[in-house]
Image (tube, rainbow, N blue to C red; front, side, top):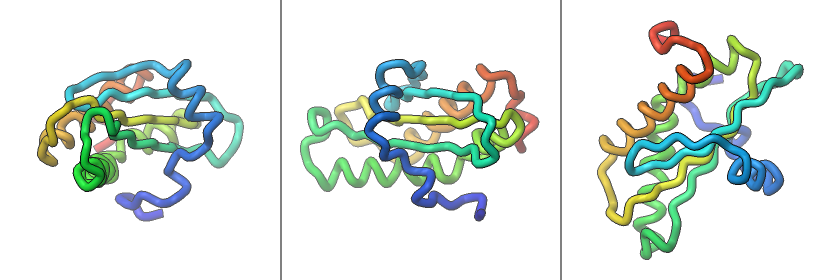
Amino acid sequence: MKPFSFPKRERLSSKKIIDKLFAQGSTVFHHPIMCKVIVEDTAEENTGIQVLIVVPKKKIKKAADRNRIRRRIREAYRINKLPLHKFKEQENKHIYIAFVYVSSDELNFTSLQSAIIKITQEIVTKKGLEINDVY
């Protein structure tokens, strides 16, 4: 697997898991992104990370703007996902993540990327892995 790819198997599409994620997931918030996370133990060899990106129509009216924000979040995650993958491999966990854009303004890539980095660090450090072990 290429370290900076975002393959289809990393996209969360199961309605059952999405409902569970929003009902039971823990929340991590760094403006402009709210993140719902579930970290599950698994005995399987095929552990993984699955990600859902949500940009509500209520906040961003134009579809082109929603798609642009979604692409920016996807790119920020793709570049900064290594700590999560390191954690997943060390702990043999399965991670489900939903990134929800909560701002009414369209923000630039750097602000989205800094929020993704902070969220990733918080997920990893809450679960017991030092962020310095990753890089």
